[in-house]
Image 1 (cartoon, rainbow, N blue to C red):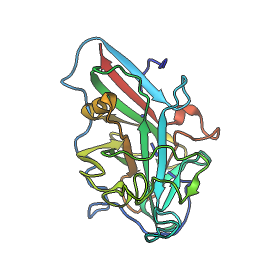
Image 2: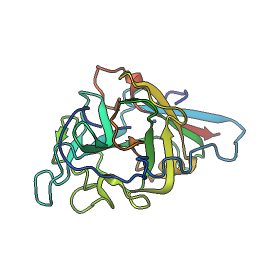
Image 3: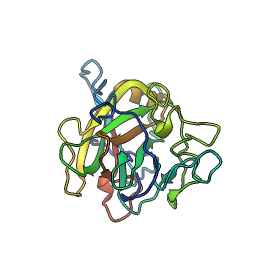
Image 4: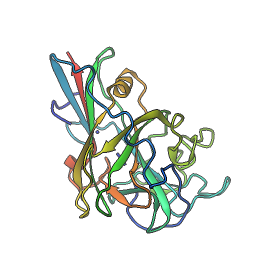
Amino acid sequence: MDMRFAYGLLIVAACGGGGGGGGGGGGPDGSIAGVDAAPGGAIDAYVGPSLTRTYQQGVDGYAGTKSVGISTYGGLGSLGQYNENGMTFADGQNDWCTGIDIPSGNYSEVWLLRFDDLDIPSGSTVVSASLAIHGYGDTANLHFAGSYVARPWYGDTPTSCAGCSNSPVGWRYANGSGNPWGAMGAGADGIDTIWNKAFRLPETGSAPTDGAPGELVAPLDPAVVQGWVDGTNNGVRIVAGVAGHHMGYVQSQRDAGRPEAMRPKLTIVLAQ
């Protein structure tokens, strides 16, 4: 696949009210546990020739992004009920929302994002990597909390799913009823996500608050991204970094209401 050489990696539902339970872990101050742990960075300050590859849905022919929002929007059913897996979003109609115990409807939503088809030769060495998204918050001093998903999840929910209860991936299950998350909302660190590895979007500072998406960039852990290149790629989990707040972002399948340049972008720098 012909990839663009340049600088430069998701997330859920149309922002709005709804019912249902919350979920996910957090500290006593409402912060999401582990957000400041183990930031990404360059491997041993590599100095030498390098090649940069970027991946952004719809740009230069790339179409490998997998992106869903899993939530309790509309309520989380008990086992056997139609909404036992909560509500999943894979559409491009509106910017997606995220948060734990979102006050406008007392629901929770997190984003799962994965970049498949990286087309990097086996044995290539990752020097550094970064993820860029465009997002915003409902008040000042907010950020997105990211972690690395540790287990496979269903990535082929159709874009017609603008809040569906029958997707294999959702709040309770990673890929159908035989594959439950370790904790609701893919929230079990060390089971659903890689233990004690996290990142913050933006790396420093906070997201804009005026509803106009701003670019937010974070370095990713090169060792984790090396695993993606070598064949173990489960992507990332993104949520509002402080519970009780509502944040939005431009997802990879967003329609013409937002430019392609606002979609999540993964950048990988390789040693040559």
